[in-house]
Image (tube, rainbow, N blue to C red; front, side, top):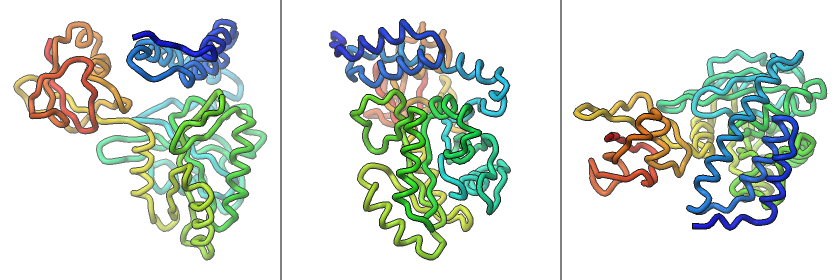
Length: 326
């Protein structure tokens, strides 16, 4: 099937060829990926572009880590996904990270208490997801270190204080992220030609405070059609399980389990794949030899029956168990 790429794709490809820095290359590649039609004819090309994005993102992060300010702003990705918390001073980002991870960010009543990124690992069922608390988005001293961190993340949490006007907070977050060439997207991708679109969930924090209910209704009315919105109290622990599940859902990942011939499935350590991944993707994630020599796989879970033989192109679902045959 032909790729049928639009003219905008070739313009972005030209920018990639002319790019001088890893950051510029990543910007152009992400533009190519966002413009590229999604069908069978572009599957290999999409995989190639994604691999290049990963390569130049890693190069960019290494470069950032060796800089004078970069050490503090380089956060190695761990777990099933990296989620950055974005908010204004005193929105409760640090308290949220402290509530759902074992990290110890500086939780204080005064603004700008977070001076550098603080990562923590959040447990969700049998996987871990990395949350990263960053300085308030309006902190100008943090501005040089934030762009690469935000662009490389898997998604954003836009954390709001429900004791304050949510509309003003959202507008400020959008404006500040726009300066960094970041476009938060909610239930559907934007049609605007933004270089960096990042999936986002809106978190209304402090729902235990007087007046929060009215502000949450205002937030839901204004932005509920565009973004998933979760109401929580990081201080009281309310709504945190709902938030964890929404983060997992928005990461668009699935858990697939391995099974060796003649043995029970290993249900403790799933292989994490993007939603829409195939048996071929699973084999590649396990080992290059499995990928090269794979004849077929047997599937337990989403198949028509347990032990069903499936080919490389079979699309997997969350909770599937696979036994690879070479």
